[in-house]
Amino acid sequence: MALNYIWSGFFLVGFLAAMVQWIFLGDNEIFKKIIDGTFDSARVAVMDIALPLAGIMTLWLGLMNVGEKAGAIGWLAKIIGPFFARIFPGVPREHPANGHMVMNFSANMLGLDNAATPLGLKAMESLQELNPNKDEATDAQIMFLVIQTSGLTVIPLSIMAQRSLLGAADPTDIFIPCLIATFIATLVAIVAVGLRQRIKLLDPVVLAWLGGTTAACAGLVYYFANYLNKAEIELVSKVSANLILFSIIVTFIVAAMRKKVNVYEAFIEGAKGGIQTSLTIIPYLVGMLVAISVVRNSGVLGMIVGAVNWLMRLWGLDTAWTDALPTALMKPLSGSGSKAMTLDIMKTHGVDSFAGRLASIMQGAADTTFYIIALYFGSVGIRKTRYAVGYGLLADVAGMVASVFVAYLFFG
Image (cartoon, rainbow, N blue to C red; front, side, top):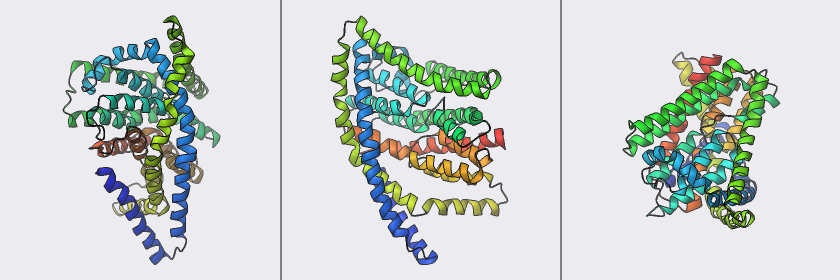
């Protein structure tokens, strides 16, 4: 029911905002802008997302099948099994879903969005196999999705590339702040959902994995900050992510050949589901992106930013961070929309301004909750999302708040 109210609310709020602008501000173009936006968003959902995703899905589902035949996915499941058995108690230790989730999380951390999406859809499909009530999300699916919305990214490659193209003095100066903010969002996501699901978070294995991940992130931050200059950071970021991903593909193929698997036939067998998955998600994508378009084009976000600015000034508080607020508001709704907002902020205020840097950190601190819910749950036909939306937005808020504090710490 949560998505029902939210989806309907987007249209109603957008209509009210448009009426205000038409009646009180004399904007006679507002309704045309909204309707044009709905048509454009419907086109984007099909032509720019679902259909291109079909090719990517076909490729990665084929490669994942090769990995499964080679035993690599099962091996990953065994390695991560002790930890996942505790935060995903409904998933058997050696179930392929564990390996699929590891692959997805790894691609996300490396900033490889094109690979992460099909891997995530495969993971959701595997989790759906364990779902006794096919139209309602399980605890494991909600935990997986909320971790997705926290957007844990170790290498924010696309953000650094955008800053470089706009002439930033040091495009990589947001690397460490991004890592800190996104890690906090992910930690909040795991802890919050864990408490909701009554997971024993003080278990030694959970503490060891979370503590080890924290130590690894801290070590990475220390190494990048103290031993690499900006050119070296850019080089490592560009090479490492794609090298690791390509190495995984080659490993799958070599392992499959050692097991005397017909690699090409295994690829074709897995790839056949790519088109069907992409067609399945089209109604969900169209519905969500059109509703988001109504909110964006009706001026609701601008009204919220104006209200927050007014309150900050009324209370005598610093308003420097509010210039980046459009990115924070757009991020849970639309990845392309938040990217456009970030670029606009960097162009308006300067790529090396406080607002420009903060918007960049926000862009890398969380992910697009409503898009992810429509995409991942839609791919397996889940309609009852339970508490997934609320906790996904909580992860987004944690990432945005952390971004503000980290930005003041590094650049304030």
